[in-house]
View: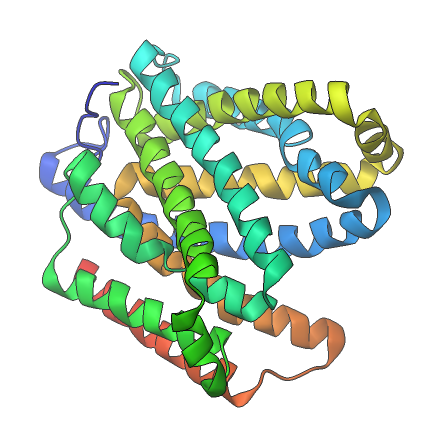
Length: 321
């Protein structure tokens, strides 16, 4: 795979200064929209899990999301009157690497969650922003300023505080095998974000939105094909089950495609570490949704951790500005 070109500026938006100012701001609302849609999608997907099982609910995100991704591309092409970018072997290589890392990351995440409580597992896995920051420098040459690096560290600390009770910190540091699986899952998810940004960067033609949506369509096509083959060989009942609840499946598919479209567009505008760090606003959003649905208030350590996360997010936004 060839190194991607810089994606910090987007062609077709006027002068270089205007492009830079516009892109520096625009990734923020796209990331917030992505995190918000993802929280709602996760809630809907959890409901499907109880109905059609884990694998059935998982494939809904891809199989029912692909048609919406294709519609997003068609709408963007029609509205902007731009040609479809030329898809090179390098773009396919980056996108394929992103999909493989995402699948392996999901498998590693399930290993951790089967062995540990959700909160502790989340603490391991959400070391992702720090890993993304380092990998972005190594693989794509993405450079972060000192304040952005500090924001990554603050947000990661907030996740650890929110995810584990004070008495569990010793376990977090002593469980070598679980640390390896959890951090490995976070690293794989981080690498998938880096790879998707890389795929967007090597596409030729089109502005940042067209390139992002094109990579999304490519990625969901690969995922749908891989998972469709697996279901066809191992679990046809899961796919049939999703068809029986097609209304809910369509909703989950749309939310998944919309969230991914926003994530990918943000990747096209700024280093993936910025996106993944700001994306952790999903924590307080998910807590608010859970409280509205169950009436259960977050614990003290969860509230403290979320406050630290939001402080890190504020620092990141200040650094970006």
